[in-house]
Length: 369
Image (tube, rainbow, N blue to C red):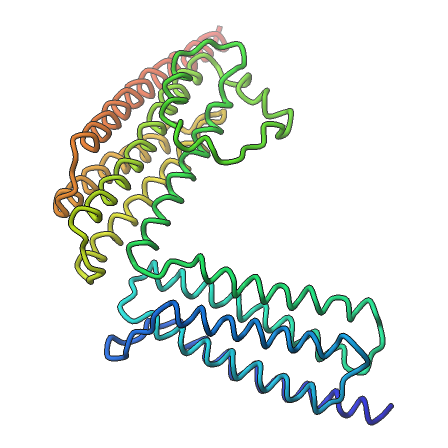
């Protein structure tokens, strides 16, 4: 028994050494590779990930029978971490010329492979010396997690343009989700023509799954809004709907430009797209802010501040798109429609503030009497 304990301690020491080496290598990936290095293709990374998957399978097979010998576990660790190290170095080579968005996508995907590998190896070493069948049953699941992480690399964007486009789409989906939540603020008995317009603007994104059986109490949220607050909510819905249209048209404009001009993944073009992505994310942030401020009591100053930021952001977006020569009439129409919705909401907020002030003055008068 003492010999098994000593062997397990030895394996833990070796494991610790391997984990430290991989961790140090992963830190290098935090920095984009220098342009002086030769760029590695993402296909090569995927091929190396297949080797990691095969090594994980080998690790799992060791535990299918009786307790393996210490030497077999040690050798499988060395082989696995050697392959994982090669995978990390190739992944780093893929970041040559990568902008912030692509670099982040690569880092997240690679980190998933590393994290699942660490969990698998720690668990297998912890099993050494035990005959617990329940513990051994966990090994196939851990191996499967490594397979999934490696397989997910095939869905990771391999170019700056693809990575940025995917992130812009996420902003559109996020804005659409806020729009759906805001529509729930409306009382079920209200007959508002805005529902139709909002529905049409989201027709392209309604295919995503939606839980219509979410908390039953949610249906009563809108009943807490006063008539004045309802008017603000309706105007805000128009702003969010038009913001969604702007983001969609921005994506279409960039996609059309790419298809027409076929620009290379050069730094100047990528920098412009990165800036547009940041502007999109700013729009999404302000839409989140407006959505959060609509619940009673409505935060009028915060909504006004968000509207100002959206207006200024749209101006910059138009300038950036024009610089890329990707401006279309439909895109301009979407921007102008959003500006109109912004003005209408600002006007409604002003009226609502005056009505609120008059109500407070009236209450003060009544109290004094």
